[in-house]
Amino acid sequence: MQVLGIETSCDDTAAAVVDATGVLADVIHSQEVHRAYGGVVPELAGRAHAEKIVATVRAALAAAGVEKPAAVAATAGPGLQGAVLVGLCFGKALAAGWDVPFIGVNHLEGHLLSPLLEDPAPSFPFLALVVSGGHTTLYLARGLGDYPILGQTVDDAAGEAWDKVARMMELGYPGGPPVDALAAGWEGDAVVFPRPDPGGLNWSFSGLKTAVRTHLLRPDRQPDGAVCRGFQDAAVDVLVGRVLLAAAQTGIRQVAVSGGVAANSALRARLAALSTGPDAPLQVFLPPRGRCTDNGAMIAHAGRLRLLAGQRDPLSIGARAQWAPGT
Ligand code: KG4
Ligand code: ZN
Figure 1: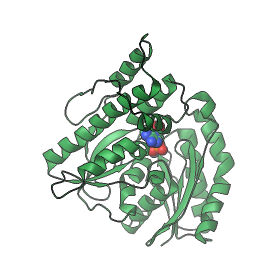
Figure 2: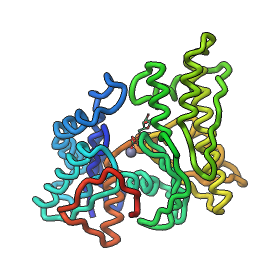
Figure 3: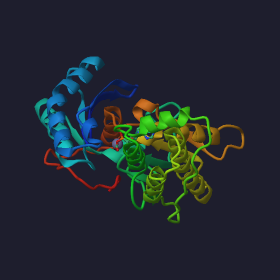
């Protein structure tokens, strides 16, 4: 069963086709228009999706060699409403025209299940850390659609912290890649920043962000590399710390990490080290970097799993701004 997946929840216009063998095509158009503003401008995102959606979907179908898929899946939320609506309505129109089933996919479920597209893949139950620009949540993935939350950020998302730190240093948007590159290239001492702990398996990133801002205002401000390295060390420490704690508490070693921040080189290296060797505390599953950030393949894949489980959505399904996966 070939499924077309469409993703337009934020600033990437993406379409992909998957079947039982894996990803047949995966096309992403990242919007450049937001760079000048240092963050995503919702109104501009919706307009840019409307301009690119037809060409992006056509390119994915052509690359996959598919004229008419067996079903269409599109992100129905959570996300920017004007952005979600473009892909959702376009997907519904295609499903209506082709007379094939439609599935409205939860964007977070798309990220959460994306490590299942890889080989090796985790098997239920596993811990699922979704760490992106809008969310930082640790789920216990017990089965398809069954994802109780073990912990989450009490304020900013981790990716947002990377973006804000980059903005303070005028490194551009999105901030993850330039902060990652400066941190990786820094060989001197790093600035030491706090590791905020709001308790349980939760995170807090706003205090860390403020600590970076305070440091940048000091007369003895350290070079950008030392700041980026210090910020990244602290953020990765707290992300990995909660995962280790959750593994110890639940006895579950399999950890699937997804979302844009999962592309971070320091986070990936730390997780890889924790899953190496006979006594490794974790068994980590990470999508390739290009499939950590928003993409159509994760939406097509989540939609396909839901279709195989017998789910269909009516074409009256609406966009949702807030939506916990599995609810
Ligand atoms: O999953 P995603 O593409 O969109 C959301 O659903 O939010 O994640 C985007 C986020 C941005 O905050 C971006 O700065 C961050 O992922 N990101 C990174 C890296 N690459 C992207 N954060 C840290 N290191 C990276 N290499
Ligand atoms: Zn995302």
